[in-house]
Every structure is written in structure tokens, then in C-alpha cells.
Length: 254
Image 1 (cartoon, rainbow, N blue to C red):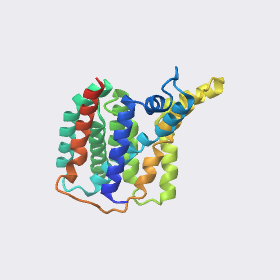
Image 2: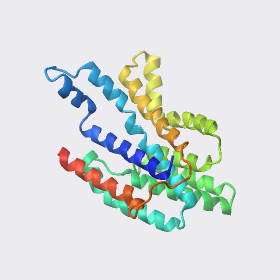
Image 3: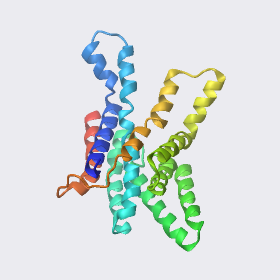
Image 4: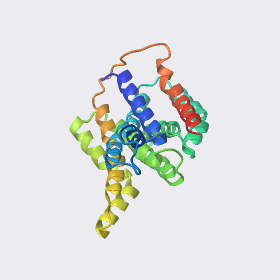
């Protein structure tokens, strides 16, 4: 799978996730097939539950792009500046749509900084890079600096460090990391299971946010290292698409 194809899949996944966060799939199923129902039909909720996984493909792919981009970029400074500029441009549309701050491009920016600190720190002292990366991850998690906070930075670092690993080994690592990095959700799930109060809603919420992203991780294993389709503005497709679609959806929704 080429870079272009992988990015297109991630963009479509993200668009689907954001559109259905405003207009849930269950609403469409209800209106189209059960217009006279007085409450949401179970089949509509079941379809909603299945389609929720589609939107979880995007984030791991974008995190992979940062790890891969850092490895091959000609200028980390220009790369970081580009991310920072578009993160700032996207912040207002992001707030309009979701009512919160810290869009994912800020996360990608901090991921790039984490990789730079990791590499340059380790050149000065064997454990300095690890210490600096851990410090950024901890601060990002505690202060909730951006979407995904510290857990996304851990995944970026994992993508970067496991580039040479076998697919099966990487899959097992991410199968472990995804539930662990969603420690609060995992703890709630285990606590409710122990108390006998666990519901399907909580199982679904946990699965979508821990197992669901494995779909995106698995797609990165199919990356063949080729650019694929290229065109003049292709490099900036994601950067412009992100704030533009947020703004359009925010205006349509409200």
C-alpha cells in the first residue's frame, strides 16, 4: 500500500468519524428504515456500533506518518513549523465542532519534538533521550496538551522504534500497548467486571477505543515505502483538508 493510498484511507476514516459524531449513523438508519419508530431501533444501534470502528483507523495511521516522516525528512525544523502553523489554524474550527482545545495536529507536533529529543538526547548520553521523551509524554498526559495526550506520543515512539521488527512482533506490541495506554478506560472496564455491573455499552466503548485502532495499525504494516500517486498540492492535502472539513462541519452542525 502506497503512502498516497494509506493517507487517503486515513482521511476518509477521519471524515467518517467526524461526520458521524455530528450525525450518528443510527439516526440515518432510523429515519430511512424506521420512520415511525418512537425510539431508536436496536438494529440501528447495532449498525452504529459496527461502524464506530471505521473512524478508529485514522489516528494510528497519522501517528505512523510522523514516525516515518521524522526518519526521512530533510528538515525537522521546517516539518515542525509546518505542523505548528496548521495546528494553530485548525484550533478554532476544532473548538467550534468539538467544544474543546488541542487538535490532533498539535499532538503530531509534540510527537515530532519527542522523537527529536529522543534521538539527540541519546547522542549526548545513552539514557538522556529516553528520559527526555518520557518527560514530554508525562507532561502531555498530565496537562492533556492535545488530542490523545501522552498515549499517542507513546504510539509514535513505538512506530519509530519498531520499524525493523517483524509484522507479528509489532502486532503483539500494539495489542499490548493500546489497552495499556487507555489505562483509565481499561481500569473502569475491569472494575465494573469485578463488581458485576459491566454492561454492553462499556464493553463496546472499551473495544472501539483499544482494539479498534488495531485496524489502523494493521494498515501501516501494508505500507510498501512508495509514494504512489503524486500531484502538485498532494503534500499539503492533509494540512488543508483538516481545518477545512472541521470548519464546514461546525457551520453545518450549528
